[in-house]
Image 1 (spheres, rainbow, N blue to C red):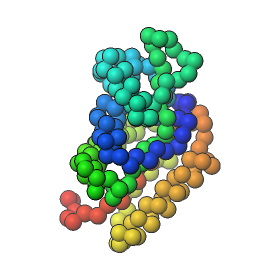
Image 2: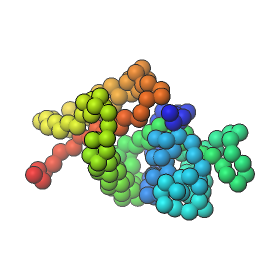
Image 3: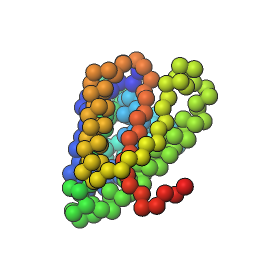
Length: 193
């Protein structure tokens, strides 16, 4: 099992920090460190198809921002080990869009997040038949639609996030595979059918 980051969540309120985090390689590095645990720049570079020099540079940038840190007592001066400091990153769109550059970086990260979700779902579709029957039976892909006000959506989001936080705190099973939960609430002006 991958070692869990020491802190649950980091709240980002500065668009400049979010902009630095929005670099696709940095988001990829952070995602791998969160899901697979500590690693080296070389190993991460192999996973992402980048040189160790490039991944090392971006890991240092993430460390300067407080998203990753060196693993004390592990590795050498040439081969440093890194870990994520937080299990997730959170920001409030309304706090950022009023600040210079905030709207643009929120849009960019939204598109990156949607791309990652598409890749995760596509990977699941490809890997599903290779899962043990118990896992195939346990998987849930849902598509709900409710008529709600913006206040209702905010309340439902808070409740769902609360349920997931409680499950993480009370029911998580160390040593078991990482299960991804995607929760998206959004209106559409027109269904793309």
